Every structure is written in C-alpha cells, then in structure tokens.
Image (cartoon, rainbow, N blue to C red; front, side, top):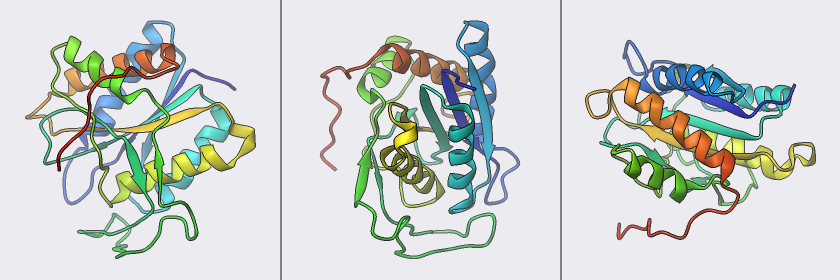
Length: 209
C-alpha cells in the first residue's frame, strides 16, 4: 500500500498524561485525509531503538511519499522542523523502558549525522505565513526524538527498496505555547508544503549558537 504521508508522534513520558506530538498528529492526519491526501498516523513509544523499529516497519508497509516524524520539545515556544540527526544517544532521563544510554551511538559505525530530506525552510516559511511561531532548528537533542530521526534517515539512506521516500522530524512545543489544534493544523500544512516542494527555498535559517 502506497500513501502520501506517514506521520508519527510519541506516547506520554516522564510522568505526563499526554504528549502534544501525538495529539497534534491526531489532528493533522484527519485534516490531510479531508483534503484528499492519503495519510496514516502512528503512535510511537518513548523507547530508544524500539520506536525507530516500529517506524521502520510502518515505512516498509505503507511506502509513503514522505515521513513526518514529530516529538515534544518542552523548552521551546514554536514549531521547529529539524535540520540534522546525530549518531548519539545521551539520555538526561530514562526512556519509558528504563533505558538511559550515555554517549552510545544510535547505529554503531554509522555516519556522524544525516540531514533531513524534507524542505525544512519552506516548511518554516509556511508557519510564518500562517502566523504560527516556528523556525528551523539545528538540533533534535540526544534523546528518543533524535534517535527516531536518525534511524529514519539511516533507513531511507541505506535501503534501496525505499529510494525516493523523503523523511524528517518536527518538534512541537507544549500546548501552553502553541495549542494542539494550531499545532495539528501546522503539521498538516507543512506536510502539504513538503509534498509539493521538491527543492527547498533559499531563505536564512541559521543560528549563532
């Protein structure tokens, strides 16, 4: 089965009752389907390795045109498409399975990093056009979000059967910074931008630190 978009979000973690990333995905996917975009949503556990394995299985099953993985960034105030995934696991807190790796590679012997293959600057520009706070982010951290991002990009780079599928990661902030309906609408809009944008726009999106 081939679809347009596979969206993933995470289950709650660190004692929280909800996770805004999954809530936003749960809003975005039905909106995309209403607009004629075939979309499948997937809730991932906050577990190193396991989350990436489940996403990989879904990619192989659905063969989407693009994969938009999402996670919660508690300290941010806007929606942030991520530029690069890095090959390291360094947990500040244990994941939901109790794992707390320190300075361990995501994929032993793998590249230091992978760039997103989504048009992250066009996606960030669409946020600004809609009056939604957001920007390109240079780091997805070293927790399970980055783990999923790296494993996704490694899968798409290494498996020739998945050639042509584009993937990347977006962080959403807590609901008190951007409410869930707005975040969901933003994700749907960014997915549509990514589907119609083959070459990213040339806009500033750098950072000094």
